[in-house]
Length: 123
Image 1 (cartoon, one colour):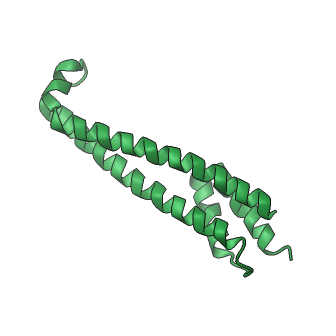
Image 2 (cartoon, one colour):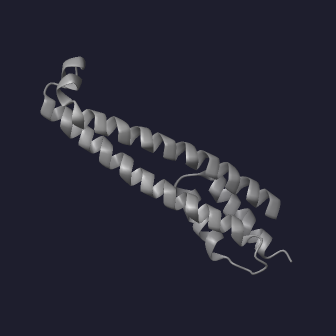
Protein backbone atom coordinates (compact mmCIF):
# COMPACT_ATOMS: atom_id res chain seq x y z
CA UNK A 1 0.00 0.00 0.00
CA UNK A 2 2.93 2.34 0.56
CA UNK A 3 3.87 2.08 -3.11
CA UNK A 4 0.31 2.77 -4.24
CA UNK A 5 0.08 5.76 -1.94
CA UNK A 6 3.41 7.15 -3.18
CA UNK A 7 2.30 6.75 -6.79
CA UNK A 8 -1.00 8.52 -6.11
CA UNK A 9 0.75 11.37 -4.30
CA UNK A 10 3.23 11.69 -7.18
CA UNK A 11 0.50 11.80 -9.83
CA UNK A 12 -1.42 14.33 -7.73
CA UNK A 13 1.68 16.50 -7.40
CA UNK A 14 2.21 16.40 -11.18
CA UNK A 15 -1.33 17.73 -11.70
CA UNK A 16 -0.71 20.24 -8.92
CA UNK A 17 2.43 21.53 -10.65
CA UNK A 18 0.47 21.91 -13.88
CA UNK A 19 -2.13 23.92 -11.95
CA UNK A 20 0.62 26.11 -10.46
CA UNK A 21 1.92 26.82 -13.97
CA UNK A 22 -1.63 27.72 -15.05
CA UNK A 23 -1.85 30.10 -12.07
CA UNK A 24 1.37 31.81 -13.14
CA UNK A 25 -0.14 32.26 -16.60
CA UNK A 26 -3.26 33.76 -15.00
CA UNK A 27 -1.10 36.17 -13.03
CA UNK A 28 0.73 37.25 -16.18
CA UNK A 29 -2.55 37.72 -18.08
CA UNK A 30 -3.94 39.77 -15.18
CA UNK A 31 -0.86 41.99 -15.14
CA UNK A 32 -1.01 42.49 -18.91
CA UNK A 33 -4.71 43.39 -18.69
CA UNK A 34 -3.94 45.93 -15.95
CA UNK A 35 -0.98 47.48 -17.79
CA UNK A 36 -2.65 47.87 -21.19
CA UNK A 37 -6.40 48.16 -20.55
CA UNK A 38 -6.97 50.50 -23.48
CA UNK A 39 -5.51 48.11 -26.02
CA UNK A 40 -7.48 45.24 -24.52
CA UNK A 41 -10.72 47.25 -24.70
CA UNK A 42 -10.01 48.15 -28.34
CA UNK A 43 -9.23 44.56 -29.30
CA UNK A 44 -12.26 43.00 -27.59
CA UNK A 45 -15.89 43.28 -28.59
CA UNK A 46 -17.14 42.37 -25.12
CA UNK A 47 -15.09 44.87 -23.10
CA UNK A 48 -16.39 48.39 -23.68
CA UNK A 49 -14.06 50.60 -21.67
CA UNK A 50 -10.53 50.60 -20.32
CA UNK A 51 -11.92 50.68 -16.77
CA UNK A 52 -13.71 47.38 -17.39
CA UNK A 53 -10.52 45.89 -18.81
CA UNK A 54 -8.54 47.05 -15.78
CA UNK A 55 -11.16 45.63 -13.40
CA UNK A 56 -11.04 42.34 -15.27
CA UNK A 57 -7.25 42.33 -15.01
CA UNK A 58 -7.39 42.93 -11.27
CA UNK A 59 -9.91 40.10 -10.86
CA UNK A 60 -7.77 37.71 -12.88
CA UNK A 61 -4.65 38.72 -10.96
CA UNK A 62 -6.27 38.21 -7.55
CA UNK A 63 -7.70 34.86 -8.62
CA UNK A 64 -4.33 33.74 -9.94
CA UNK A 65 -2.47 34.75 -6.77
CA UNK A 66 -4.99 33.08 -4.43
CA UNK A 67 -4.98 29.85 -6.46
CA UNK A 68 -1.17 29.93 -6.66
CA UNK A 69 -0.92 30.09 -2.87
CA UNK A 70 -3.52 27.34 -2.38
CA UNK A 71 -1.89 24.97 -4.87
CA UNK A 72 1.57 25.65 -3.45
CA UNK A 73 0.40 24.83 0.08
CA UNK A 74 -1.34 21.66 -1.15
CA UNK A 75 1.84 20.62 -2.97
CA UNK A 76 3.86 21.09 0.23
CA UNK A 77 1.33 19.10 2.26
CA UNK A 78 1.46 16.30 -0.31
CA UNK A 79 5.25 16.21 0.00
CA UNK A 80 4.96 15.93 3.77
CA UNK A 81 2.39 13.14 3.47
CA UNK A 82 4.63 11.23 1.06
CA UNK A 83 7.57 11.53 3.47
CA UNK A 84 5.36 10.38 6.36
CA UNK A 85 5.10 6.96 4.74
CA UNK A 86 8.79 6.18 5.34
CA UNK A 87 9.48 7.68 8.75
CA UNK A 88 8.84 4.49 10.76
CA UNK A 89 6.17 6.23 12.85
CA UNK A 90 2.42 5.98 12.59
CA UNK A 91 1.30 9.39 11.40
CA UNK A 92 -2.34 9.65 10.45
CA UNK A 93 -2.70 13.43 10.23
CA UNK A 94 -0.97 14.02 6.85
CA UNK A 95 -3.01 11.29 5.20
CA UNK A 96 -6.29 12.48 6.70
CA UNK A 97 -5.47 15.99 5.51
CA UNK A 98 -4.83 14.64 2.02
CA UNK A 99 -8.17 12.82 2.09
CA UNK A 100 -9.86 16.14 2.90
CA UNK A 101 -7.95 17.88 0.08
CA UNK A 102 -8.91 15.02 -2.22
CA UNK A 103 -12.60 15.33 -1.40
CA UNK A 104 -12.57 18.95 -2.54
CA UNK A 105 -10.38 18.55 -5.57
CA UNK A 106 -7.93 15.91 -6.63
CA UNK A 107 -8.96 12.24 -6.75
CA UNK A 108 -5.29 11.19 -6.64
CA UNK A 109 -4.83 12.85 -3.26
CA UNK A 110 -7.99 11.16 -2.00
CA UNK A 111 -6.76 7.73 -3.07
CA UNK A 112 -3.23 8.44 -1.83
CA UNK A 113 -4.60 9.43 1.58
CA UNK A 114 -6.71 6.31 1.84
CA UNK A 115 -3.83 4.08 0.77
CA UNK A 116 -1.51 5.96 3.13
CA UNK A 117 -3.79 5.36 6.11
CA UNK A 118 -3.98 1.68 5.28
CA UNK A 119 -0.19 1.50 4.85
CA UNK A 120 0.43 3.19 8.20
CA UNK A 121 -1.57 0.49 9.99
CA UNK A 122 -0.46 -2.59 8.06
CA UNK A 123 2.60 -3.53 10.08
